[in-house]
Length: 193
Length: 368
Image (cartoon, rainbow over the protein chains, first blue to last red):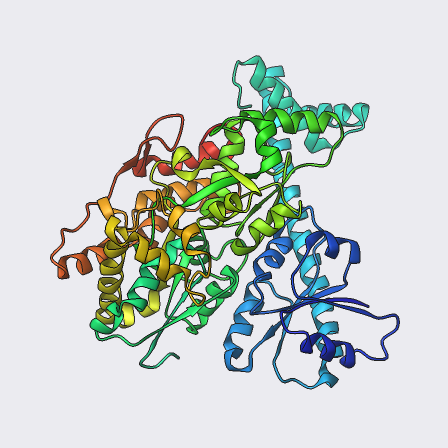
């Protein structure tokens, strides 16, 4: 397990390492200041960040960036601000630990964070795919309607024509439909398709 | 929750001046308020603390206040209100010295666009530019500046996030090649010999909106007299901070280690175009919120079906500002219905914000 601890205070990184003793292989790296390139090279399985670290904004933005490989984030929160921890979880932090916890819990907290993160990531990917499928279906419907109108085809025939175009070009049905609509737009002199 | 004392959060930037001055000069006390001014180091933590009541009010990026109220990008909604704008102008786009020398005169990004195209042909890695938060005026200014020159900010460059006070260090280390942040951190990079200011926010969006003072809607509704007293203290502080004869003292106050903590001379040099109160600067203008929402929609940071006019009016509350101003014997500021000079296509009107944004969302690289 590779763990990156971003914390102005080195004590908590030591606690994480102690709590994970026995996990093989294990590498816990502590940095006071987050460096994106260094982190990318290290490829952590989980990032632990203190809620009082100025780098929290950077780490939150990494989670949103689609290009970067997202990582589960665990956050350290002072005991006096336990409510803050729950809020951070609503904002996308995978799990949190409140200061003063026993090192015996480190391992379970990180493991829960990693599995929760994987679950959330899978749900998000499924949702994106469902949205894309729906958009594609709408595009196909519009292309079909266009063919029916312009070529005087029955619905069935219009769909078969699209299928044939798709198979002939080896491209997905949705992409062929989108192309057809775009070209029709150009032929009619509309630039926005 | 917070009990009798009020906890107000700020980040080390010039635009926290109204909060800092009200604290340093005792304006909160004169309004009968006991305030703990708390320095925070991250916008995400500021937002979360507001949501749970660990802070009663906060210095906040205007787009973050709007996004939090909407629950964007994927959190749950935290309804906030912005009864006061903390500043007009202050953000700037700074490029590393060698990059600035290579791209030539601004304030447009045409030279940079040519350089980016050449680098792509040569197979070089994309330029890395930093902002303070994805949902910030800085991110949208930088995106608009690039897009106007035909550069796609999502594909032609790498946008990253870094804390304001660390920008100079990242520029010197070559980790980033440019950034958009509010002063004094642009001037600090110039004074350190690391960078050059390529464009001021005000050169793109005249009288650029930036930070707001935000509280939760629940708190605003629970204790209107206390909120009004906070606003009176902030209005007096903002007016004091604007006065030319106070600027040297303002720089000295901001420079204190527990406030902004930068060099006083650098801060004084960086206060050139920022306005805290004059000409209605402190009034939250719903048209500013609408403009920012339209930028958020343009870059797909919020869904295209968000009702811009409704959200702008819900979050930005010039009525609360006006009530506090009238208490001080000042006139209420009349909200603007349009912005001139923000869009190359012509005036941006509150009433047409939705159409403008939807158009912008469809054509991200066309000037919005």
